[in-house]
Image 1 (tube, rainbow, N blue to C red):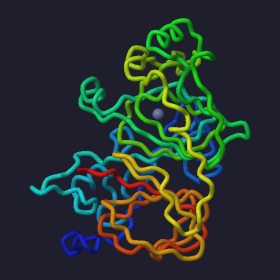
Image 2 (image 1 turned 90 degrees about the horizontal axis):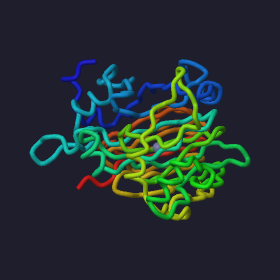
Image 3 (image 1 turned 135 degrees about the vertical axis):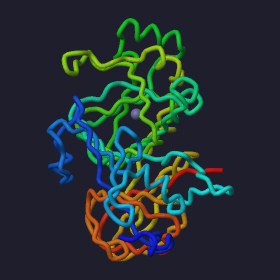
Image 4 (image 1 turned 180 degrees about the vertical axis):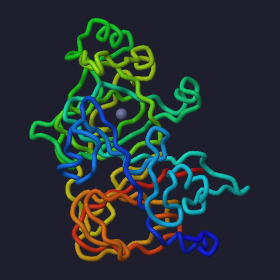
Length: 332
Ligand code: ZN
């Protein structure tokens, strides 16, 4: 396609589809193939990085005039499509700010915690911290997550870790399908086996691992980061009510905002029939979680992820499907 003949405003009317990147993990499974129809690299596939411009899994653009580029390259080449131009004509944000993943945890994930922007900037080469949130796609009947802990001081935390008193230390929280969990930096957390979820997060991959159940990966234990974990963990932990939200099925054809913070706004929409809205955000990431239909005439189905660029205008969604969406937080 000839770029010169195609002004940005025509491109702005097109959905941007991406090829997901997959990650094999010691705790991964095969449900990303059996239930989501993705071509996965093996039966230990834990993560589908559906919309990512992170160097550890930079998605390839599969439609439009930027087809074949990595998303990070498109971000740099076409800032107008992401409303990412500052007053001097430079980039407002250097890096694509969000990352959307689907996670299939066949086994428990390690107990971990992420730093905030301030800590990561100093201790992780200027990287961003990591604020993330989870939408539970599926879990066992007695499903639970590790979220927070029972230590009341940092000294007590250190002691419980040193003595391996994990059952006393870690807090387990029951969850069900459709729950929404906000994980601020400093929140100890772990996904347990049997859970599938969609994660929306800051574009960062900095994880401090506190405990890995003594497991071996390629014959060796995975690295732990006890010192950093103790430094960044919120003590005492935040109350569970501040992190876990039971999101009853929303009204049909309504944008149901699940959370809004400086990093992202996340919402869900149950489409039935036809619904129209205006895309006025810098850009909007959309994931089809259930069902199928059309968006502005393009067929979409469960497992599809796309970006509605800046200036997209009117969106018309038709069919019977659950859309899950995220937009970047306020940039000023
Ligand atoms: Zn995490």
